[in-house]
Image (cartoon, rainbow, N blue to C red; front, side, top):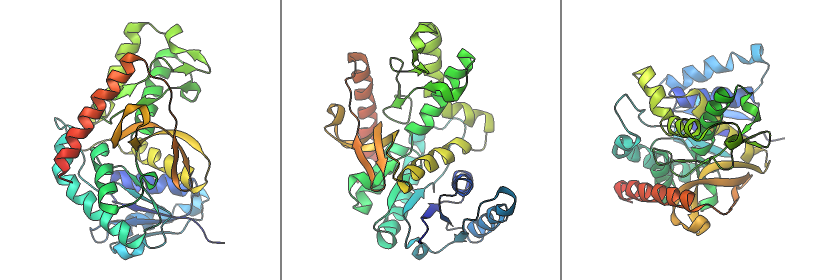
Amino acid sequence: MRRNKITIIGAGNVGATAAHWAATRGLGDILLLDVVEGVPQGKALDLLQSGPVDGFSNRITGSNDFADLAGSDVVIITAGLARKPGMSRDDLLAKNVAIVKSCAEQVAKHAPDCVMIVVTNPIDAMVYTAFKVSGFPRERVIGMAGVLDSARYRTFLAEALGVAARDVNAMVMGIHGDNMLPLIRLANVSGVPVTDLLSAEELSAIVLRTQHGGAEIVNHLKTGSAFYTPGLAAVEMAEAVLTDSKRVLPCAAYVEGEFGFSGCFLGVPVVLGDKGVERIIQFKLTAEEQAAMADSEAAVRKQMAATGL
């Protein structure tokens, strides 16, 4: 029986970590692809040798040849420059758009039937770039953002409440940036609204920390940005596609009228299956939430214009 194939473009911290998470979950054969000779080969070999200890038996290889994309079911694009202290995600746009453009061209050429998951920052602009360049239908091009931002949000809520993070249900919508929308109204702990458990001031502080969660890590690291959770978040999405599990996850998806927005990528809850986005789950937003989403859309369109596509 044919095994699934996952290709991760970019063998830096995020890409290599995503490969590790994919291997431990036994999702299929893994190709780590990078333009720097020796780096993907070395990291793939190192990861492969952990199989006897961890118990996985995935085939893991590294390559510098984009032709090896052939046969990929899911391609995760992590290639690009990482943020450093003082940099916004937008500061990366000009340099990373060229990188993602090149990657998307190669994906369309060698793996035309895959589902593409974009992780490179600024995500909302980079997934738009991949969508425009590849010519793929909207359901097969997705940006990783909401899973990561929601994980941060859930972590901060759990810390404040002194409960297990797995029992916190919370979602972040909108742009992957300062205008993101961590939904307070729907956040709960095993069904109990967080608004019954935390004060408005406490919740506002958690929302603000979530919105700047990436920068907090960058400021600690000095020379790079987050990679453990971004890598896992991308694999969580890939697993939903590969297993056709119909998971409902917040992702950057191309909207065509959903929530009143069209023609751009926004973080929204989607159902993920083997063809990618099966549908976007819509629900009624409050006036305040709708205004926040409009701010996200404005920021995304500014990024889109800066790509020149």
